[in-house]
Amino acid sequence: MLQRSPWQKRQTAFIADTTALILFFTTTGIINERFLAGMAWDQVLHARILGALLMVPVARPYGLWRDWVMKRATDRRMSRLLWDSLALLSFQVPIYAAIIASSGASGAGLLRGTLGAAVMMLVLGRPYGAFLNGVRKLFGVPAGGDKPMSLNS
Image 1 (cartoon, rainbow, N blue to C red):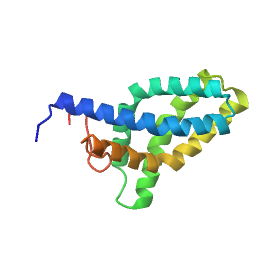
Image 2: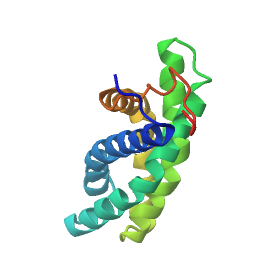
Image 3: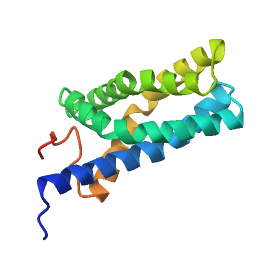
């Protein structure tokens, strides 16, 4: 088997985390923006383009944040669900609120969209964590929360 350099491992982890974040949250973002925030389709498109551009630089830092938070989880299902949800909520909701605000959501729509995203992050925390681990596995990257990762691994 070919041995990868530390730089190649970091690059692969970046690509895996970015792919997972863009695929998963483009889909859920469209649902939230259109049907909860009540944004027009052109606003949704703008938010998704902006969201995808912002996901590139934040996907790997979120992956590392999640790995760090998940170290607190036990092997129990409820513990993993709780910590995955808290990791996603604490990292992504502030970013998401800024995205939809800059895409035209304001007032009650901004509040509904942000609250909707918070609920979605609580509900989707563990499914996204499992999806992220699955994508990481496809790329040959250790699953976060199961095996702590660092920038040097």
